[in-house]
Length: 232
Image (cartoon, rainbow, N blue to C red):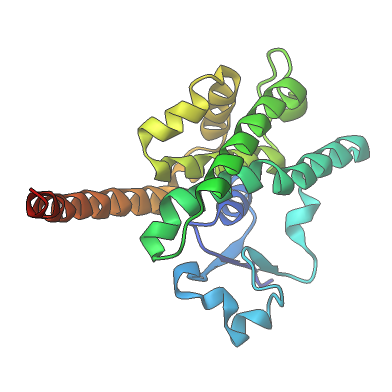
């Protein structure tokens, strides 16, 4: 039997969640990299796989990934509701914040201060919602589950992208959310070593962006001084 094919870019939060999920559940799959930075997801070839041009995309007639949802229909419905909420709230806040504060300058795109402000507000609201609704009491995982679900992975991988913003900014958003930090640590431990392996590329991107930012600061400093000196 042929393994399923997972088309993904590990810089994509949903891609990392699906890869970790497959690893943890020992689902045999072939990972095929689709480089978002090179716009491979917009190619005619990839659109034959996913007309929406988005990753991750899975090619398997039996949709094995979805068979790994909990058997209980009520629990499955609750997980689906979290995933539905995720896209318009946590993902919208975190992804927009990262795009306009880190990725856009890195890729040479236009940024929006207003988008940053709104995204930061939505992100903080979303983190509070997770704590108050799905991590009540001493819940180890979402909905009080004894083990992480695809919802836990999706949300934690989303929050992990804050690493790209640097430690100070990351801590500014997460520092006041002790439950979130404990829950993230629980998910990492429960899915280790697959969680760390799936996020290696994210930390490589973070290191590259920090290096570029430092280099830009060094080159801009003298020019700034020259402009000031010319006005004296």
